[in-house]
Length: 66
Image (cartoon, rainbow, N blue to C red; front, side, top):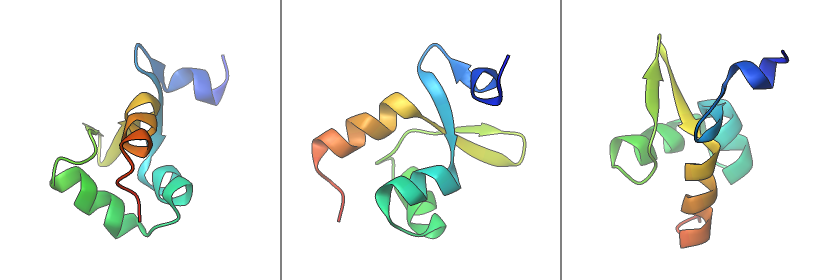
């Protein structure tokens, strides 16, 4: 089992906030704001947040980046 397999679930890979921020070319705080405002679905796991990869793809498809 690889590290990416460990974070894979029925909705695909679960991405850390930093990974989402890098993909969107924004800061971590912007990602936290998107989560807080309900723009991006996320799950609290331990002390961190995880965003399903499918939800990031859906967000990008909606064109709300920038």
